[in-house]
Image 1: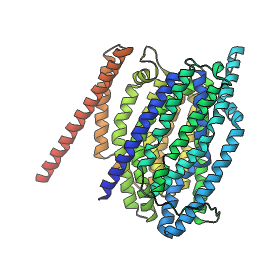
Image 2: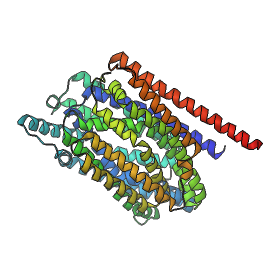
Image 3: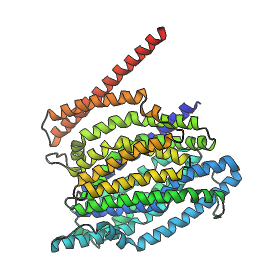
Image 4: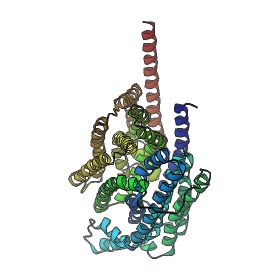
Length: 531
């Protein structure tokens, strides 16, 4: 089987699982918005549920995703199976120790963590001060029940790295479905026992305990469903051992020190965004940003993450062999594959963000401007820049250029924080624009940075396929905007029909333009051949 065919089948397998995971994740967001709405309780839940992800990235997640696969592939290529798996065992044992300690510390420090995120919110009246106090108490209680997620996310990250080294990609893409299904069931149960929950009604109740434990149970089951694939992956050489002098541990430590700085920068900017969002007040700004980010990530996760998951082991092997011509070709290939689909997705999310959010999160009612729709449209505008930036980062990580990765992330996060201070202190739209603008600027610098390492991405950024998709997306923008502006339906079935017709007009315009341009290119190639 050819390399292209193998890569294509892997991407399809990953994309299928990622699509199922993201669709069930979308349903999870919809159910969450349906159960909790855009309320102080929703903000407390979303804040508490975001913190374990941030802490996991801080203590291990960023280091694992950036270093484990390149280091494991390098050890297997240089040392042979027996010695390599001893080194890999040392890395994994050390990671488990770090995860255990971090989980205990997070549980103890939960009240201080929540206070750190909410201190910017001002309470001018006694009533609002009481709500803020209760909101902090509920967020703290939920965070303590969510803390086990840190450990299980670590197990999932380690298992995924091991499976990828063995060229098994499908299971890790599919198992988040389990987590989403469990969480959906827990949220529905919570709605049945408390149809109109508030901060006051849930504080100190067993219902809040079951909500927290059930959410963490979903992450635990996500890991457990990876165990059959791990058992079939010939990993029997793994042992519980830790040798700080092992070359793999030293490599992870060396590369991870830079990656840890990257993660610190990432979490600092995310903290600023969430703290400013919480400080804006009103109807669930943290929830609006969380939901908008989730929707924006949908096309990126299905397309780009699938491509990158299949490409990363190949890039690591090419970098280890110093085959930079092949490395550049593979990275351009991934960039071209990603942008061709990301560009039209960007247009759809920018033009139709408001009706999409109204249909999914606001009971099919677009009679007023929705904060989550504003967030989604602005974040989607930065999606191409976000995609390019992440692809370049993955390439630099495969080359083990940790210092360059840190420099780019430091730039991106510094831009985010500076723009948040200037644009986003009192505006959710300005806060969101800060994130998109920062990624766009960092993407330009990232392309120039990797070009200095003799990896040119020009052929991927400006290929005929990308240009064709860009032109077709422009026509689709006009078609969707015109179709949506032609009607004033903003509720119920009329809104759904309005949204569907606008989306259909964009899809038809895109497909027609692509076919016309493809036929013109084919005719030009035939004429050139005859000449």
